Image 1: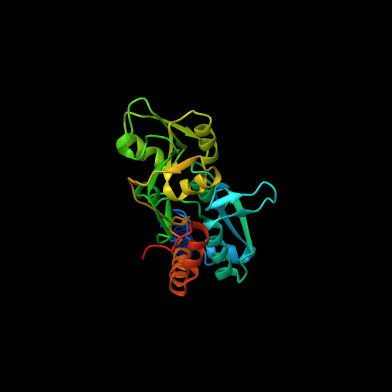
Image 2: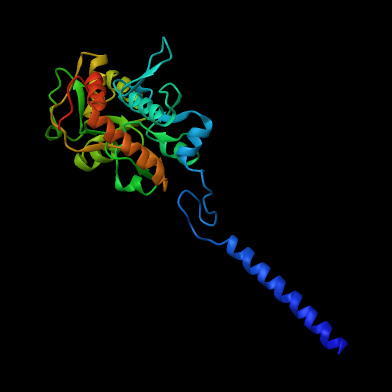
Length: 283
């Protein structure tokens, strides 16, 4: 009898241990939830919006070398442009103050890695929405529609893609869609890639290339800096710019999209567009 009782006691303890192990295994399962890595379900309040509010600052990746969109004044250290004003509008919506913002310089090559490693909350840096990029980040709705074109000397015979000839050198920025597009559209030209568009423009002025290619919106800013250059009228792509947000962060995507819609409805977007581009946006 004693042996039988002892056996029942041991069996009962084994059952308890087995149930406990099962419960623990359930807590550590490999499911993926929004905002969390595989095997690590996201806790409440860990998305981008929560982090911005907890920090009381919106940290955003922007360009420092693009007149009209994001250009740093060497005299004052201020960065100004279309993208900066959009970033300020987000800070105002989320934190109630457009000055609660920290700008970090990004390039076409560094912006996605900086977002993925948590250095920045979002990318607002003339970033074209593409299917390949959608695999790595989420995008807001389109906030600016541009088209790829060329910047050339005023007396250049180049007026568009049809004038691209074998042996010509075209300069652009590393990691940009512009480099990919020009290679596909004009396979006979030589494409020279530089770290950013400021370096590419310097190379063009130094005679290292026949033309610089990127979105016409950016080229207008360069032509404004140096009246010896002009932007060709023809565009050969459509470049829809989106605000890049961490993959899976649907809450912050919605916040940004709601703001963009609100800005377009109340006229604030049109004011920013006209301030920097010089014309009202096409409806």
